Length: 350
Image (tube, rainbow, N blue to C red; front, top):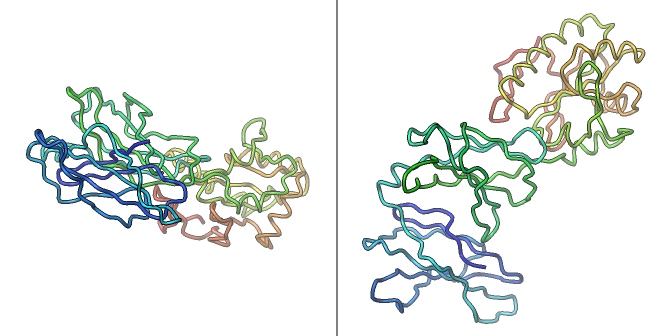
């Protein structure tokens, strides 16, 4: 257990340490490493820290030997600090040249599937053959950076199985640079989505816990896989016998396929059939590229009752995180779901 360096700049160091059970506050101290003064006293940065990371600003280090930090915990019973946590190697500032040359922090967003994040960055001319090293860390005290790809070709990656409620951070650097390039600053912390409680409540009566996935022979897939990680879920009530529905479905299909082509996985459409029999449902669903509730599943009618379907076509937009209705009927409304996961006025569904 030790203090770790989260990020360095030319005049700042960001450090983190493991949480101590029952601690009420932390005292963080530091000292400059000197070539002839290894016993220099520590200076207190703060003795009232409630979290497990801190940034020290306005540092200078002309000798380039770095700094040592140590942290002590004050317990609930008011016991004085009896032990300190530190680290072996000094933490060093970046040079101005290193700071100016390093890449910008990567951008992070929801990955559109259960517990996934989409990480992207801008091209850097220093990357050998366009390859990058990518690291991540769990956003908890003392959690270290780990490499998830040492030589990745591309400018974005989708990382799955990110289940921590504390979230995750990412950083990137060009691969293949002589002497090793400096890593970018860390990304913002992202907490991914699984299947939200709102979606679990709405779809909790599914007989097999599955939705149908479109195709020549539609197959059942678990609800978690179908809707986990989605920012928006669109319930589409429609029927093959309905003329306006037959006109609208190709428009919705085109919109959905444009989202798919742009690698936007944050949206899913779920078909709620209003056909009179299963044969009508099956023939109509063959023309659709999204999910569906099985015709024989009682959840289909329960969902239509929940959104109060009185006429079709009906396209109800739900917040994937809460199940709350965002747009009662998007048919004929402006609807655009962009890369930032927001609803905007750029795409008209008529």
